[in-house]
Image 1 (cartoon, rainbow, N blue to C red):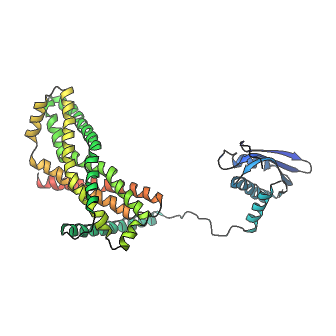
Image 2: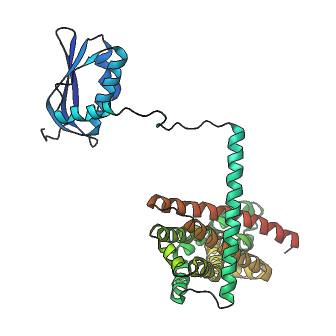
Image 3: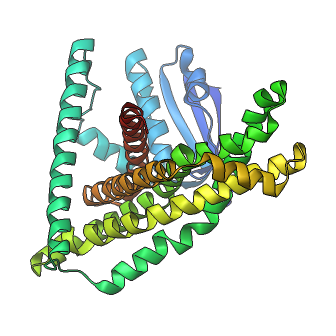
Length: 378
């Protein structure tokens, strides 16, 4: 066979006695573009008695050429045209003979199941129920491991806990700083549009301070940590699942909850309140920049308004939410990592699912806690 790297080409010419010769040239491999099947079968639309082949200029070939020839065979069987394979290479003829000798078994092809609306609703309900059971089971096991940690009976590596605290805390400061600063600026911009109509620009500080302390600081930090740390936890544990490291821990008598999940949960519980307070300060700084540059609000006036408006309860609400959010981020990331399959694709799916699960849980928990706080009139 020739090894010239040229594009696949197909042509045909009519021979005497109602014979059609198909000329194959170039490289018929999967790496190069090929003509469409419709273009290939177009010359066979007329009534011929026999099809033959000329492969004197054929280069490299693989299964792509075999697929083409099988399509021609199927078309000729439907139209009653004979196929003469004498002009094909020996290897191609041998492969085609093998495919003819072993026909396709019935029922091998997978057909997508057709389900009605009621069946789909039932399947969704079953999936939600199983997911809820799995999540409650994981939360219960994690709670038992956390209690054993508080009692000093948990088996884990202290150096892992220190590294996780650094990863969840100091290493997250740059992205938390950027996002929180921009969120504070956005709050100031949005509030100033309405407050400027009444000449109340000085109250931008009240809006930004209250919004960051009670809601946006904790919420944005939690979403950032879900995409950053929750996905990382899922990928780490998922990779350990693929490499059978978690099974090895079980074999040696270690509890995966105590050794892997509890340190990650504890690291987020300790760091999330600190990150929340830091996010509040960065958001207020972003709002102060808007007030200073656009409305000539002095830094002293801006700070005095915030200190006069904010109460301890406002900061406590945000910090309390951040603790809950930290638990949810750890649970979502670790649970999806522990549920990971045994392939690299499963690791990516676990990381994606951890982010989605974490964000949904955080938003739902935030709505519930906000209603509770409003009911308590804090």
